Image 1 (cartoon, helix red, strand yellow):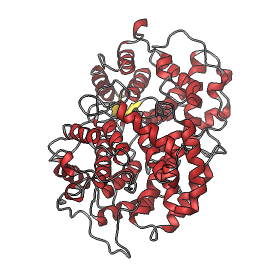
Image 2 (tube, rainbow, N blue to C red; image 1 turned 135 degrees about the horizontal axis):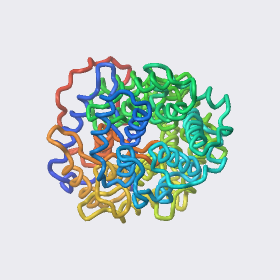
Image 3 (cartoon, rainbow, N blue to C red; image 1 turned 30 degrees about the horizontal axis):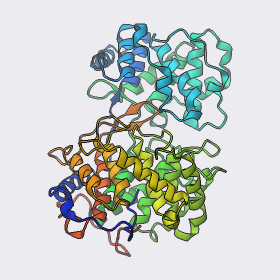
Image 4 (tube, one colour; image 1 turned 180 degrees about the vertical axis):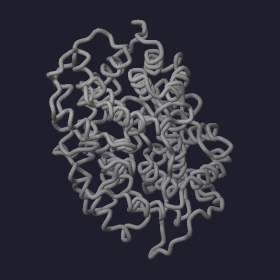
Length: 545
């Protein structure tokens, strides 16, 4: 996600073509994000409440007739979503509060599944079925086919979630023979008082619901409810995950570096990541989890590279090894586990990380770009990823392609990626200058940030980028932060909110843009920031490609 080098084919844009307040606005956002960096180098922001987990916990409390204070707060939170514009949130809230909804309120399952990768479809269909069963909102339907519960090739989180869904549906359909002792042991192994396994409250609550109908598990249910309530937010709701602070820290570090933040601060962020590197060489999304993933690992590699490739050589080498261990025979990368289907967004992320190694990874990068190009749709978009915005993979694939020398070669995979991506962005800009998550949707700051990153390395004409930057400035609050709808999803396609990510990706975009502008407007004076003491370094920090 670090800025690509400016080439002769993409000359600098004149600063006068952009809003006059772009530089001070960037400085305010940079100062705001700098203020979030803790003394230990971490950037923290808790995940907000979500209707899905809140409804599941309320159903569990109703079932056990426990924790009346917690129940009342959950009910008050869910009442605010009775008339939500989101059809699924509206359905879940009404079902949790009122019981079985009217048939007209039931979701369009096929529309729901359209926003998940094809290989996850059977599992996501079963998950939604189980959630609706638990809330008394399920339409009459047979238990899903066995493929929905196949654990082969699944990473640990998916294995537990699938097993919990199977147990819920087996009980609902009176087929207890579908659950065996190994299934129960797997579910029970996730329950420890006061600890949310892998930081995932959806899985935690799913397991409690799976065990609740079975005798001999009352103590686990009681303790598990108490653990979940420790994460009840001030608004009364329950989040999807406790936090994703490691991912936030890595991406914030890249954004701050791109926007010219003080080197000691970015160094401290890198040091924080070094302390969180897993034994396998990768990183997970939070310090509460052990399962590493390609996305967090790739972002961490990029940050360690820009803060000192020599200083961090050993850690980077271990991380590159972890990435290669996950690479598929098609030269693509999955999110979590070797042998799982490759995903375009993860392939782009890994290519950006591997490109830090120069010629040592030239062949690997070239092969992965070929796979990435094969996954791009004719309109320039890619299959669904971990974002609600189709421009998320687009910007990351664009950066990946630009890092390979072949991007200037006619008809090369890299050139195909960049040409299609740029055309998509240019063709879908809204009249207000911004971009929406999907074509025809209202503009939002994060999708606009993704578009700006894509444009910042390509087009010779600055007009679209200037209009996009102007739109982003209309979304800046007085404290420098950014107002935007959330775009993170998990599990796919359920959205969740970590507000600081809007600040992070917007600053990343403005940092990319600053590298493209003439020097006069590329930087604004930094606000004083003394949270972290300077650290002596063996080499100066530069904006390395």
